[in-house]
Amino acid sequence: MSTAKAQLPSWTFAEVLSAFADFLIVSIHTILYEREIYPHETFMLARKYNFPVRQSRHPQVCDWVRNAIGACMDQMRRGDVSKVSVVILSSIDIPLERFVFDVTSFPKVALREQHNEMKNVTLNMTDMEEQYRTCIMKLSHTSSILGKLPPECTFTITIELNDDAKAPVGHDSPWVPADSVTQTPGVPLRSGAPRVRPLRNALMGPLSFDIWVEESKAKDKVVVH
Image 1 (cartoon, rainbow, N blue to C red):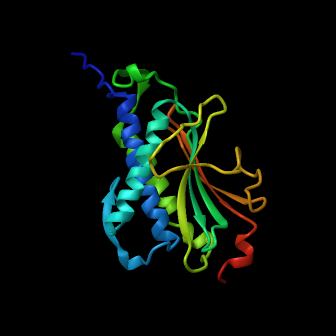
Image 2 (tube, helix red, strand yellow):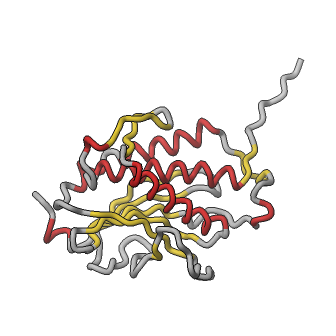
């Protein structure tokens, strides 16, 4: 008696972006904790992707991050985004570090088709969560490789648009277009040529993405040893 092979679930592009938005939010909270943008005691221990993660307890921080990622997703739905970045700024707004999520390989799907099953794309939930878990694990160890930042650093979230994308006009959400940041690892940041540290290449077929962190030259002048 033959047994039919179990079929991997099909995903819609809307579902893929929703899962990726959740991942970005967890990643940002992890970065904020690891880089001590806010005191460690203001974070609570949670669990995501079967891995312990940190989440800010401050409602305004949580709302800001969620709203910023929501605005990023608006552009990703249009296929306009090549990179989403978390930029760590000094107390006088000099960029010190930039955590880059390169989504260049994500497919462009027409808005009217984003709730239809994606053709020729099957994702196993376990495999996808494993990729996300490994990324969070990498981000959770960045303090040991990046060293300590000076006091009173802040952060912002930026996006880089594809060359053929139209810049949004009159958008009232809390995101800003990337200002003189790199198109590829190693090209100068505004404050000087950065050191580039690859963190993870998440392999999910056409939904694969890369994460790396850049350290600006300005960081050498203000870093706490």
